[in-house]
Image (cartoon, rainbow, N blue to C red; front, side):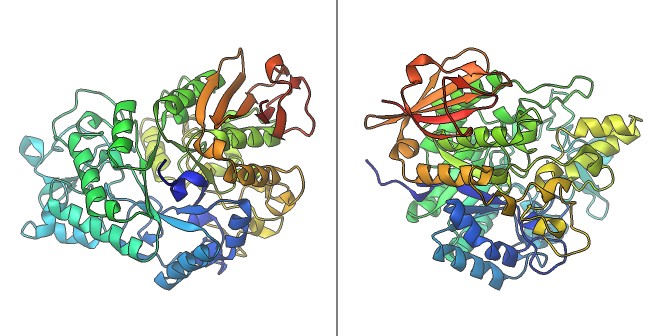
Length: 542
């Protein structure tokens, strides 16, 4: 058997730097703040950190609009701080994974500024085109992923540029081989600094096969049929592997693959384009894109999706929340059994086949902001776009806010809750860039330094997983139960581990054939033949 890679053995901890820890009292998290918490991360048992973007950026989309890939945003510190973070993490056997954003740049990137000159070689780094109807309308009918037209007209150029996201995020034209050269230079720069690898943002959208009009009528993402997972996309990723990663054994590539299907997922893995990738299917489970028809979370549909991908892929990047998703305890629980739900979700995530990702605060059970907190303080550019449209269409403000509440990424981006002191111990500033969730006085990491807490549960479960060949390498077999009871078996070299989960508010009888197993960990203090509301157990079967 091939030697296991580092990313196959241990969980990854995701840090949203702006909200993790503020070292200088300006209300914004920074690299020195992360360094100060490396011992906490080490003690959690994770061995890799994925950082959301810390590059120089105007922050229109909170760093996903990069103005310089080889420099650090002053809000977060300096390149010397970044070098120190990499070094200090390595001392603790922790590796750093960067966010690579190369579908688009910022409109303040030097390449884009130079591209406005039609005679510049940089003009072909982006999709500059003449519009329709004597240049008075966009070149096609595509819409941005944030809603609204996907084209912006620039009078001094006399052309339109494509942006699948914010108008401050112009798309790179990967038909130009110079773009590949530039991106490979960026990747090599960071790998040479000691970075372990990359999480690649919306990476299955980078190649636009055609700029034809779309026949769909989607408010967001119209035109997707011409750029999602195209053959050119696969060729680019294979080139990056051959040019760089085939020569570096100790590195990882992780794809954020919007709307990926299983056929393309297998290609990404089998053809060495990624080591693992994120799916979105299970994240749509409670989202409704019709403001008049809300959608409720259904555990069976949720688990069916997870089971399908577990069975059909050799390896998965497993997650239940991140910087783009609401807090999982709020989404998938009942608002009453928060602690039990947090532990149940942790057990699910950490015992599936693949690499588990734990998002900052997930390990203490952080929750969404209360609804009223978002009214005047919203920072999510995608939500601001929707609210602007709602205002123009004269939707009542309260109705619009309720609709966007299910998408608002600010929920997951509120500051980390370290203790019960001012701003949850995140910052000494009078005002933080996003408000701290007011429940920080009781829900914080310091308060959970005790037996039986959510944090304690995560530490024990991660420690067990880090030493378990069965959880790292074992096969996956889902079990069929009725109602809100779910379970699966991981098996390796004769050892069988059962994860059993009651996703409901009512007691459920434990299946008799599993009662004789040894409970490794549970989110309730005592066992028995009944699974209580949101009870979860990891059991070693005889």
